[in-house]
Length: 193
Image (cartoon, rainbow, N blue to C red; front, top):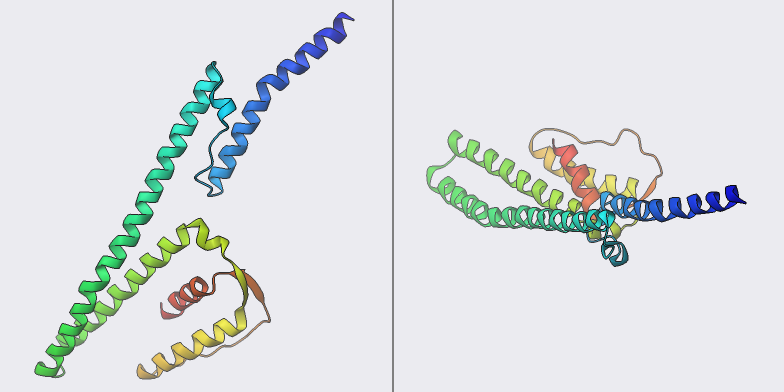
């Protein structure tokens, strides 16, 4: 009888100690998976013991992390958009200079550098989009061969100006889930590089 009672006491004591730890671990895994707004339950936070202190600290840390990541994403997005306007003005100025100065190697070099800047800004915007969980949750079925053919046709048109060719060597029938515009951007970046 004493063994049975002590076994039951130990069982309930173990459950009492491990259940909150397992719930906190579950919340930590959700945050790791990108759900930054998740917090530990209020019941755990209201405990008046060391575990309650740990949960309150954990929730404060999660809130601070969410705020920092959110502001970083917003800054990246804002900087990328703000750089587009001066870049567009520089392209217009380059076209005006080209009309007056003719074909100058320095202007050709400027045009190449402006194109590179434009591509880098595009990549920054893509990274900002990829970082948002909501964008990745709006996945649809994408026919990859159709998408790649479309990208290859666009790239072939651009490549002809440079005396190059873009050709699809092998094509598998494959459908994936994803954001078509982000997939297009990623594949175009690889192809252009």
